[in-house]
Length: 210
Image 1 (cartoon, one colour):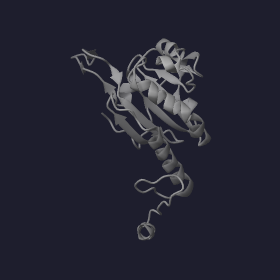
Image 2 (tube, rainbow, N blue to C red; image 1 turned 30 degrees about the horizontal axis):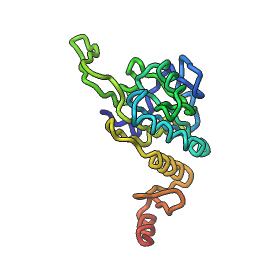
Image 3 (tube, rainbow, N blue to C red; image 1 turned 45 degrees about the vertical axis):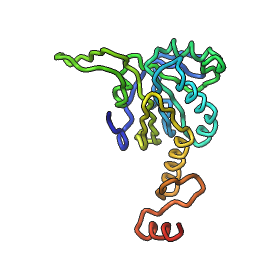
Image 4 (cartoon, one colour; image 1 turned 135 degrees about the horizontal axis):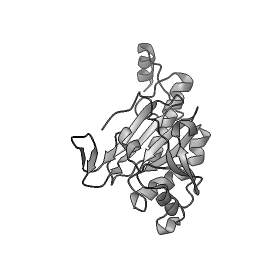
């Protein structure tokens, strides 16, 4: 599993469903989120149990993320047709109807591999070809990407463990505060709290007040 923090987010062009209904062939995260912050998150599979709770939770906060200049994009290794079918299913039946942000279809598993979060029993043969003996799906990876396309934060959960959308928002707020004010954000910082000047004097002043 790789660490992408500080590196350019891997580029891709793949099928996706946008606006909850339209299938597109060549969706590009770097183009969609150009000059914006982005949260790109992976989930294991369509038509499952924990996954829809996360997708709906991001949708519930979508306007708040967008107001802060951040695009939300989801991805799994299912097909775009599977995404589309799940989007037509009502929430009270386990579906994700009402989700409007893009959902990428990583059917080749290359996006998931490049982001370092492919789960499954796999190896490479003598011809360097990928061979699999089990499921090839994504861990619950989340990547916060800045306006220059650089990954600034990542977190990866095991399959049964749902993520905190509030924590994703807190990390976005931290990055925005850093970019806007040049101040670093201490432990448990949240929007509106004091941050720190990244000098010895600035840190000493902060600690003296806390």
